[in-house]
Length: 271
Image (cartoon, rainbow, N blue to C red; front, side, top):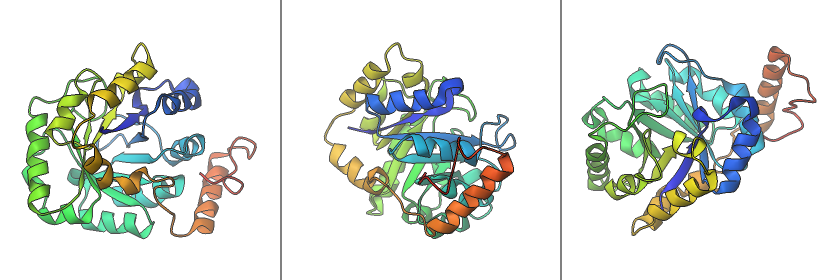
């Protein structure tokens, strides 16, 4: 079956821990956190503090999707906060290979994303070998609930052909517009990981939504899809390069935000 990743963008932030825990219990494989800076996209969401709290609340893998300008500036804070996979936008990076190197230096997995209106042809062939995953965003950036762009399935198939032609096992993620009733089409087109927001968090039953997502995407590509992203699915899926220094940086963040240690103590916990 496809890897099912829950996007917390459409969760109820007033009770976010409960929202994370109930979806984890329903059986999703991972979580995706959309970090938006109000510049690359018009919406502003959250930063490294919230990523660190989600990391505390779940042992499932965490993807951080950077919808930000100058993504190289965000790599270390997000890795410190507990991101297992850092995905940045090709359109936002002056030097995508530099961003990837920064992620690798932190001991984490790297992915590159394309906006829904950026042609797949704009991805340099060399990037396929450098990243663990390519994220095809299927809706306009910034808000959940939209339907996928009409050419999404053709884009998935085109990307899979290019990756297979090079003999690589780079994963393909689709983010946006995926619903339980339509998930099978994305997997059949060649996607390995489906990121779902409103299809989970606004479903009448979270448990039924996640069960349907898994059951309808089960097929001959299951084993290969999970093999491509086995490092992401491992627990933990990545290891920080310098754990004591990372905790000290998180402690400085806690002090800057004036968060009481009884609420968050980075030195005492492992995000």
